[in-house]
Length: 123
Image (cartoon, rainbow, N blue to C red; front, side, top):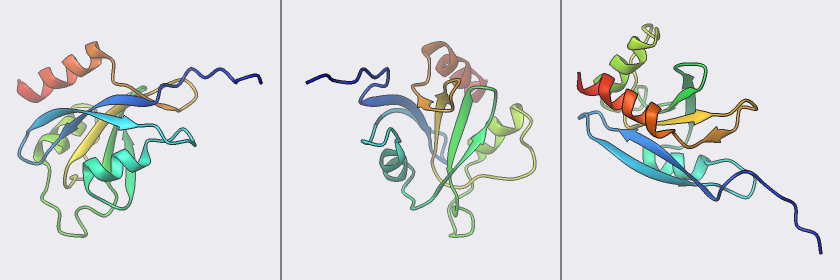
């Protein structure tokens, strides 16, 4: 039996940011189809997610129905998005920060990018 090689791991490391400004690392399990949606749903506590591309590789995952469902405005996430030029809306609830590769696959947040995000949030 020949096993296919894969470059994806069974989980990715991400950074979650709550409306109160708490930051914490999360591991998002990768599903059989390669997505991390179940982990995103659980971390963000939602049924639908949307992704905001903050930079060419940095993604912010948000509750797609957060503000319309009465979620608390996440001012730190809204400010972070503003730093990267996304100033047209506010974001509600917990958000998750990841990266994506050249093919658009969600991947772990690199330590140096994590540190840069943390610095922006704590300055």
